Image (cartoon, rainbow, N blue to C red; front, side, top):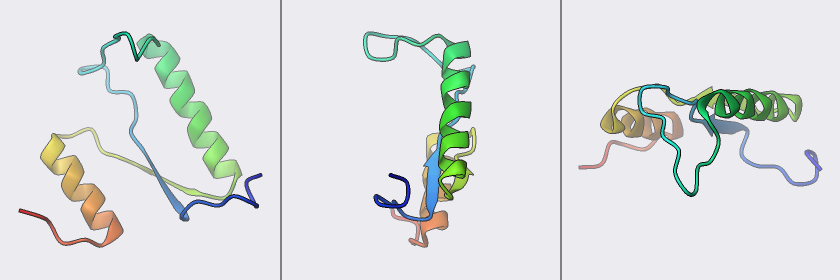
Length: 77
C-alpha cells in the first residue's frame, strides 16, 4: 500500500510535548501512549520511504514559520 498510495516525500510529525499535553474527550491517550504512537508513526513512515520532519517544540508562530519555510512559502502577515 505504501507504494500504491503515495503522499508527498516529506511527512511532518508533531511530537508529543509534555508541557502542553492534555487529554480530553477526543484525545484519550495518556502521554506515554502518545509517545509510543508517535514513535510507531515515525517508524512506519520511514519504513515506507518517507522523510519524516519533526515539527519543533516552539510557539505557534515559530512552528507556523518553520512549516512555511519547509514548504517554500513566504511568511504570511
